[in-house]
Length: 205
Ligand SMILES: Cc1cc2nc3c(=O)[nH]c(=O)nc-3n(C[C@H](O)[C@H](O)[C@H](O)COP(=O)(O)O)c2cc1C
Image 1 (tube, rainbow, N blue to C red):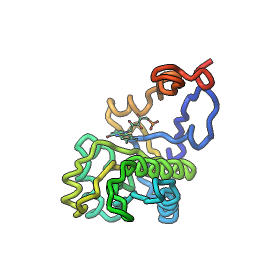
Image 2: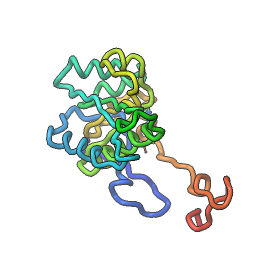
Image 3: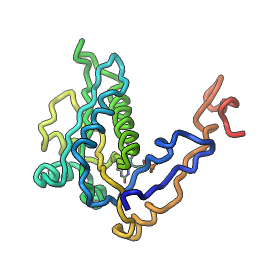
């Protein structure tokens, strides 16, 4: 099941790695090799960021460290815990909300954390792993559990590993796992001249 694929039915061809990144809820029990896990965070490390502030932080736990694994899981909402508990690695991304060079608010902190996590997810796909990010976390609980300081904020949960057998999921989750992957059209979000004017150069032909 580790090689289960779910490629994006893109309107025009996109890079293989982009097409093959997706967010599974069924994970194989196979652990993630430590070298590969390190490579994922190295990919995050080389993300671009406003003022090169690198406002991304991660709290990570593997299943062979049950105490810390549970601490990360406890900072997810129940629905996400129900499937993420079977992933071999769970994590939380955290944003540093102020620039270290001048103490001013960093308006792009969440943006840059998201971008670092996108790098991580694409590196994962390149290694045959997949990442599932989650907005469904409990930021206040995460602050309490991990002692996240003021001016830092939990952004998203992450479950990662090799994709598993959809048969391991509940009927409802299996239906979502095997459902059609969908996106809105380019013309609905790329504009020219005025808000809402689809850009003909990139819109669907
Ligand atoms: C920031 C973010 C938050 C998300 N939150 C959740 C979540 O709480 N629970 C969940 O099951 N999926 C969550 N997802 C996964 C999305 O539902 C998924 O990315 C989307 O349906 C597109 O599917 P794909 O990633 O397989 O292309 C989240 C994804 C992102 C990027």
